[in-house]
Every structure is written in structure tokens, then in C-alpha cells.
Length: 146
Image (cartoon, rainbow, N blue to C red):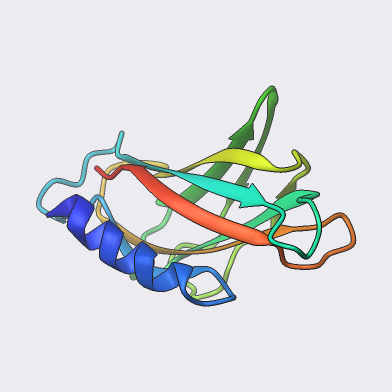
């Protein structure tokens, strides 16, 4: 069920140029609000004719009602590089500051987690971009949904 929901949501998101994924439960079922829950996906960046990838751009948004101290984080890892961002205000409906990881073409591992127990719903924006800031080939493969 979890994989099916992610597949449907991410498959739909992959069709849009914006590469937005919205309203994803973390964890999927609120009756199991594990503090350790981490969702994981690979973003594959490639030259689709617009040029080679220069970087991956990511933002995260906590779409849940505000809970003091319960925040949503996103991490991106490629090779020996990593970047992290936190949506600094729980449930305000605004995206985090962006993170940019300059890793070229290839697979970027993306993780989303939270700072403590409690169910959260999050949204992501992710774009593979050339060094000049032109959108290039972007695909996603879900690896783990908790």
C-alpha cells in the first residue's frame, strides 16, 4: 500500500516540469508516528538535451498542523557530498530555504525525516539543473516509505 501510494504520487509528479510532490504522510499511517521514520528516494539527474546536470535543487514543506518543536527535514547525498535543510516553522505552509548539491549527472539519494514522534505530512520540490540554471532530465525512484 505504501509503495503504491508513493508510486502513484511520484509517478504523477514526475510528469510535471516542476517536480513537486505534495501532501505525503510521514509516516504514512498516523497511528504509527515513529520518531525514527525516514522516507528515501533516489533522484536521477541526466542530460536530456538541455545540458549536463550541474546541481540538484530541493525544498521541503511541512503541511501538517503546527506542533512546537516537531519539524520536517530533507537531506540529499551524492558521493561524498551532503546537504540538509529543515522547514523551520512547523505547519506554516511555506517551503524551506532551498538546498543545492552540486554533484553533476547521476543518482542523488534524498531522505525526508522529522525531529520527533508524531505524524507529519510533507511536500517536496526537486529539480535537476544545469550549471547555468536550465532544467534538465529528472526522474525519481522511491526506495523506502515508513
